[in-house]
Image 1 (cartoon, rainbow, N blue to C red):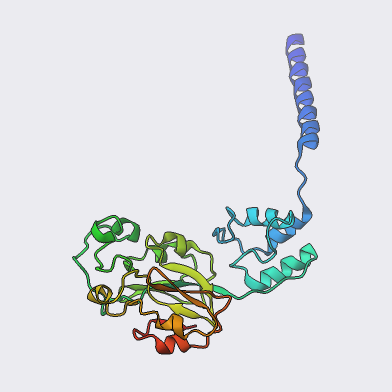
Image 2: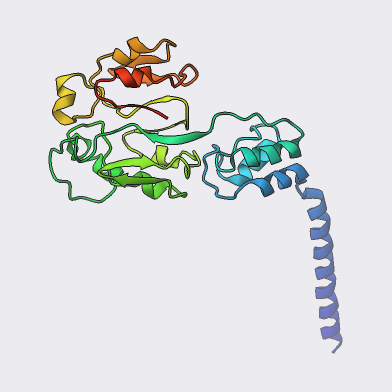
Length: 263
């Protein structure tokens, strides 16, 4: 009996010592959490989409609290979240133009020619690995297999008549569809007041027309028409400088292929 009591006392004593050690260690080694970080995290939507450039909402909250990220760094939360976070951080929220994804292709089933019938996996990244980068005769065009649709957490992008299109009201500009497109056809652009070019072909003239009736032919008329220097031709495709574009629509009026649209 005495042996049992001694053993119990030893075990109990060791347990107490371990408990004290862990308690002291916890106090010594605990990481102090910035109260502002907790408050900022509470205002973020929790989608963890990565559109802010961080691994998730926790990462963005920590960066904002440290002053390493802007208070409006969450594209999903938008202006409302930015205003609340700015109040927490004691700064003023600056509101920029709202962005949304835009698909730079108008080569649908009616206007773009196919070279062959693709019967592989219904995924754009897989189809881009086959000859000519997919069945579409235009090597730059949308494959229409919906990799961007699968990537979108907000049901903002759909494939219609062979080409993806974006519902700007639902789009949160998280950028997942941008990363999912193997043709680099999707960009984040201002939602309104700017010109958008619905083509990404680097061909010119007849070669373009042979594969897509709605392709940009590189005529440069839009560039010559712009009074603000907002359009510059790059490898036969017009690039819009959104810091200069006023959305006047003159380039769209002059475009012979009618593929420039004013948002």
